[in-house]
Image (cartoon, rainbow, N blue to C red; front, side):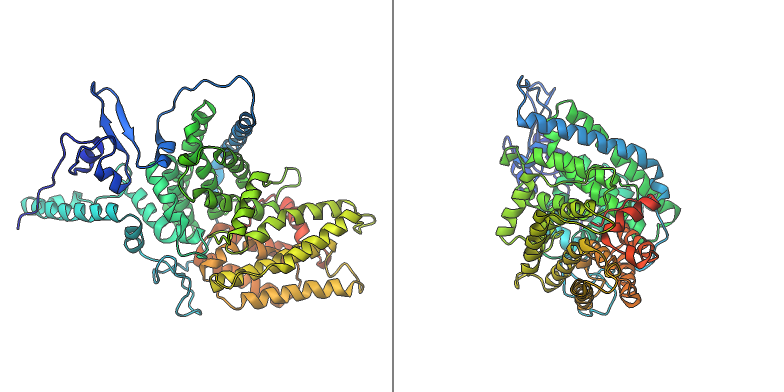
Length: 575
């Protein structure tokens, strides 16, 4: 039977013509573009310019042309926010330029254990918990659920292509050598399609910890990527960096591909920053998402240059600006995810900040939004069920620096206010307990985080080896928290996705023990995490712990981390 001919629209919108689909010519948004969430582009009467109508306000906010709007002569809070954001973006891109040349040489040897497609994408319960397999799904099953129209089109095009290929091969068998399958990214090369596939099957699952049924790294970021070339390029670069780390460097070709996509994404990011600084405010959403994606790209790469801290400052400035824009310009529920994203990245990086640099801070606006999320029982793919604990960590950080700065003869001399703050923080941490309705592995991870935050607080008062027989209660508290944390870790395997979020508590727990057996448990866990999940910062976290464990027992403390990193001139994030 002869293949059905493809109906091509000659009078409809440009989008339907390009897709070779029948257009019902309904303006300003035809039914095909509405159904497939595409931009509907029409020729004007003089055919010199295009009329574009997005499916929703979010796509318009990303891709509509810049409008030349007069600037107000008086400075407002928004003007100051924009100035701060522009400065942060310039710092971020300047840091990119400084470190992009060394990106190809910053990779290390990795283990060869790969994740195997075995379960649906967001399945968290594995059938055999002793098996070092991370639940991952193939592309078609998950992506087709998210974009049914897009994948139905892809299947139809594949059938047509197969018919055409058969006819061509019958006429000229040698032509089979030049045929290639159609791509979801027709404007990109085969490598980009492979990286998108890798992102959907592995990278997105490695970024999210599986605490929820829906992974926002797919459901929210992928639609943005198809609407905006900057976000797409950044996701492809993230995928390439993750693949290089997870596959042991991927050889010369894998390293070259990762370096190529990374430098290209930075170049495109700098160009969009330039447009934003010049007044193109509709790039706010793309730059906010882009700067956050860059943070996790550095996590995937195992960045040791502290580049992530510049991206963090830029992302928070941009997020504060984005949150002041009309809600119609931002996709539904995206702000919640971006707030969680920013808090997770900022809080888990604050402990490793170079003392010469200002630590990343949470703005009152973002912290306030986070508290509203907590009141709603928010559970996320980055913060799990412990968002409440994340908000306490900066307060512990600042308290610790105040107390440690007040040392006399090597002993802390806290003020009365510091003692009261210490007690209040301890009370809030001790009161935390995950809701029983959340995923059981997420609940266990939340309890591990609780022990990590307690240890971070208690270690302000010194290590167990600094007391020389005194302060038995403090020594017992620290030892008990380490034992409880290790017991909790023993209740779920290191190969589950939930471990993606555990580098921060693991580095704290490891910095509070000199016991060889405890160190072995943490070492093996981080090795299994990197071998399965493949994020570069997991390997760098273990390398840093190994250096800490070589120190004298009285110097093994979370509050010595920055000194160790300064000695080695290595600055990493524990996100």
